[in-house]
Length: 458
Image (cartoon, rainbow, N blue to C red; front, side, top):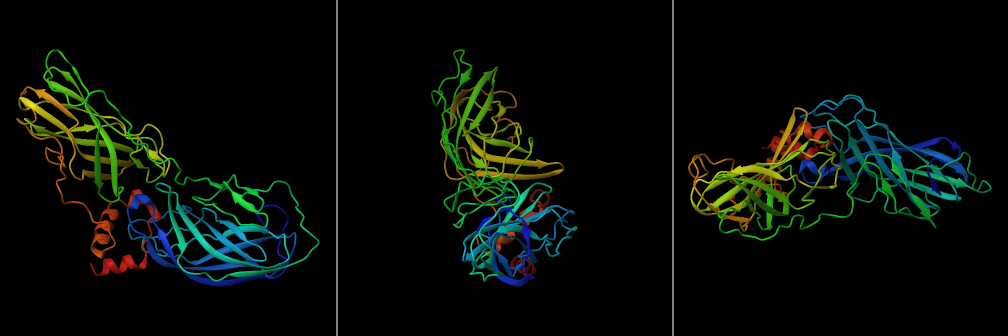
């Protein structure tokens, strides 16, 4: 059996259609910070009842009922929803058939059923016998205001939705040039995924597809690069004697982030200082690849800042900020935060320490903004110690800049983090945050029946 676009498209006998329902688990986009949700999918498959070896037949997937509803926070625009999916092929041939629908939908109001266009795929028949077609996983991509994907997979054994009786027609023939998409040769397709639609680069090797890739951006291997920034020296004692540059030491910090941000970030942080008069210009560096991008973001969308906690002889905090990302970010790819800078004016004389505090990630898309604070979890070692001289209007003598997020020693201040566990209360608090970021999340965060029950009993 060959899956793809080669050959003449045939419907050798009247088409058949059947409704298949199955329990489904859908994973909202990573940016939502929401847990998986259970729903029910109802699919109608249409395919010829009979065909011959060598025929290429069309299979149609009609989503009668999606396991989701559009949430009550955002109307989805016309032609912004695109589904892709897979059908398991069994019986006399095995493999997977990739299905794809157009980005075509009517406007979908808030709190209404999702309307998905039909998906289609073509199947070339190379062996006589009876072939079964069973609906499997599917993906829903929403293109505005940013591209997001909701991935849905069956949570029970699904029954076949159509059967094709293939008779011997004298062998396999191919009419019409180049085969596109994923192909198999009587074997099992493995490792092929779809994220946003078009699959490219699949090849066959003795019946088993290897190395399948997707266009649309799934998470790539490589992970996070630990370490990132290294500095010479460490704690600097004695900032006099004409010295102007004071390199800090690299310290490990664990951050606990508020939804819809990542659950946590582990990074190396280095605080460097350059003396100018009685003040210090600070430069704060984080490790490379501190987090994965939750979605495809344009240049200028993500901006970091941090509260540097001052301890020892001096007290307070200093806000440092970094520029937004200069290049677009791909979904699932590691993100490098820009270096953050600020000015520290001492408010006390003596040995003062500087430690990493709350890290804040701001995401801006047009007029829509989301603020994700990540507080220090546990204790952290100061990155830099300076011999300071009190200045007029300095940290201890004036207003503390920014929120500290941790004590002078870098200990988590506790409280204030939204629970995101499986308990009902945690889910409700996470939903409250998502309601305020609906524009960022777009239509890909779907409202399932259990969520509506929770809101009704809140």
